[in-house]
Length: 179
Image (cartoon, rainbow, N blue to C red; front, side):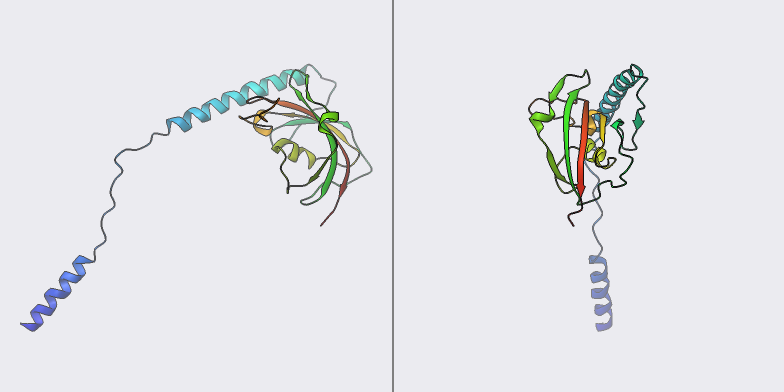
């Protein structure tokens, strides 16, 4: 009888240790908000690209370069004597202005003043940060940034509005390795 009791208790313990079954969710999200957001951003990108393509076709004398990062640019002044492009942690001294796609000035170089930026360690909007990495001291380049590479949906909460594509003319004065 003792043997039977031990087997019974042991069997009960084993069956009691079974993990509970996972419950199924009561409701499932369809992702319609995400789908709508993706669709809206695709259409916005297509509109901005069409505007930039029109601008570029109206200026056939300019050799626009499509960046791997999703913006266009050209060099106003190219520095042939320097191979030094900024790397992580370098101090970049530069001037820039910000224009709307119609060419109207939003922020002038005088308003923004000369900037000192530690590469990838300080805040700067994505397009400008990526654009600076393509430049050498003494160069001036003009960048065409779609809104997602500029200030995005929120703008700068001052003069740059919602989903606004920008044109920036940037001059790099010098690059210093400060590490």
